[in-house]
Image (cartoon, rainbow, N blue to C red):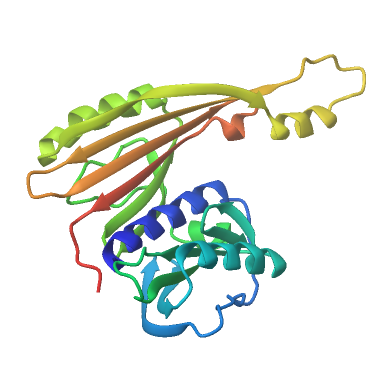
Length: 265
């Protein structure tokens, strides 16, 4: 249970790091309520770069539905926001609550609480390098800057930034990964959507009042490549590109998650 759950938590933390990149909030670790009579059975910890996570396991006489109802009500009362079932955010913390179905009648219900601190922008950028470190398990795109490179309980996570397009990156990785013994398992089609550009609107406000410019938009594209090796190793490469009239947002982000089949203690 802990191994599978940990992989979910690791992926979720990385996702929230990406979507919350511009936030920098410091606060004390918030409290997590417990159902009356819940008994702790085990506690473990793990690190994802600068993010610290603690996972605690409990037993209770409540069933799954009552556990979910308790946390939906109590977490909201304490100021947490539910992002999706069992996933809550408050300040710069992520809490994940998962319960297992009972195997037999009269058996206790097992559930876990994982709380992780989401690092702020300054912490993430502390290890930024204009010249990326070399990796032993995959090629590094030569026209990129390294945003972060973190050891993970399951392997390595890295992020890069470049001016190149997603199409250029897809071609680079699909050909370059072959030289490191990888096979392409899955390639998600590149998707593109257009939305309002807040940065563009701010820039427009600084122009003379008589300037006549149309409302500006930002075009976002995404791509996803999943590779595997015969020994069971897996590597996911996610690509995010923003294009607008503001030069600062014309960047493509590369997010690498390498699963080296490490055992999570």
